[in-house]
Length: 257
Image (cartoon, rainbow, N blue to C red):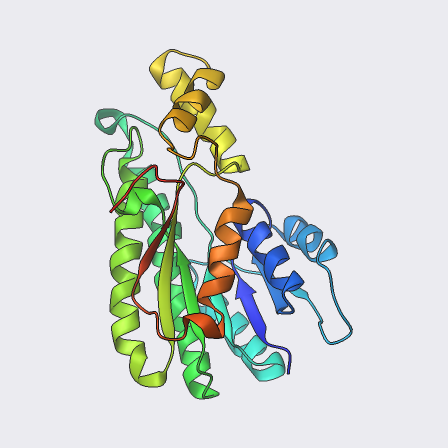
């Protein structure tokens, strides 16, 4: 029987790669994003066997009604075996100059979005008695504060790591596992924006900042979205059924805990 997974923020970056990797492994993928055009493009690029029917849905991860509608609709029609909370945003600014509006928006998407969607997914899984898996995309910035110009992002991702543990503890009685993945310097459109912001804030070039990211990574390369996607695939597989509440570092050694 084909299993179904929902991936948030799958219109680009890590989410798009996660959707592609899971489709290749036989999962039926529901691609969600706040950008309909991007979600459609991701679905169009997914491989599909005869038993796979990929779909997309527009989703504002911070809207409880929106999340509940997607979760219940998918559970009712396709079953719901896994949910990947990937949607996230970032904005770089010095802590002393960071506007509170940016803090509010970052936490609304990065932390509230995981709470809202995780709750909606779990409710649907419990209702249909699915022994499912939830994976939250955090960051190595969720394990250390030594990250320049991203105080609001750091706060949100530390929150995701803690929320993952709380969810795992309470959902264990329903045989639902909850884990987070903590990537490092991943080559995505988000990183391209961050390179430009950081270069401007440091008074240097994007190439120099990029090289610093590589220098900070013992494996001596930037991370690819596929590096993250493969770990997500493991965490929602049967091989990981006795892993819950963990924050798995996938960063080439850039931060070791």
